Image (cartoon, rainbow, N blue to C red):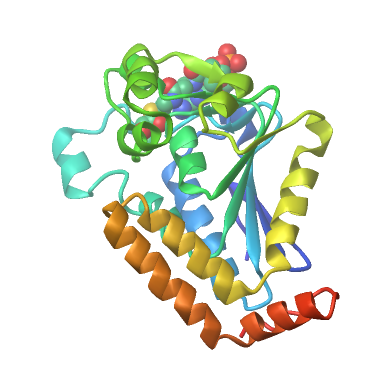
Amino acid sequence: MAYNTILVETQKEIGIIRLNRPDAMNALNTEMVKEMGQALDKFEDNKKIKAIVLTGNERAFAAGADIKEMQDKTYMEAYLEDFITKGWEHISKIRKPIVAAVSGYALGGGCEVAMMCDVILADETAMFGQPEITLGIIPGAGGTQRLTRIVGKYKAMDMILTGRMMDAKEAHHVGLVSRIVVNKASLVEQAIKTARKIGRMSLPTILMAKECINQAYEMSLSAGIRYERRMFQSTFATRDQKEGMKAFVEKRRPTFKNQ
Ligand code: CAA
């Protein structure tokens, strides 16, 4: 399938999506969000794909929703089309793990898309922020909710009310970044390596683990633990649990069949 705003490739069991509007700092316009959703769906449906890498270019992961596209939108248009729901929310519904590789700016909707991913790797040039307030709006793709849950009220207030950016070091310190990759040239390589490491595990078990972690943001602790317990127990219904434990006892690497 030919895309205008993204580049898509597969490397064995890993699907890779590169946001590709370099002249606009990868600003997320309607077409890009739609194409990203289509590519994610294709990877989700492809049985060979175990994990996905989402990245941008050296200057920007994505500098937010496309300001030029939305500047003249009226309230009624935004409301009736349920602006920032269609397509955007789709990313957070993908069951396979998504590793974000962030170089340069991840601002506004770009930061929000990164926060919809499951692992965030950043190089030392990465800059995160929710600058919407400087445009006279507030974050609209989950920034006030996800950022607050990740970094806490006071850091989220600082970021969202002032619109300032944080660098990779600060983002790592507050838990927004999983890992900093020191060598910029190897960021995507490291993301693929991470995705591949995840991909070597049992797919149903990966999906269950991701689902349980995401439930931690939706449920009370006791309900979440009960949810986890039932999922944990259900892993004993998989062939891969038998293989994983047998391989440990036999001192060899497991060969998971994703069943
Ligand atoms: N939308 C549309 N175009 C954008 C853009 C955006 N979010 N971000 C950058 N661009 C465009 C610029 O307009 C410029 O285009 P022209 O060459 O045609 O003028 C081009 O990308 C390069 O950008 P700059 O010249 O500004 O590059 P810079 O290096 O000086 O600055 C930057 C880079 C700090 C990222 C700056 O471009 C910037 O502040 N961008 C906007 C960031 C922002 O406010 N994001 C939030 C958007 S709202 C949102 O995302 C809502 C939501 O919650 C979903």
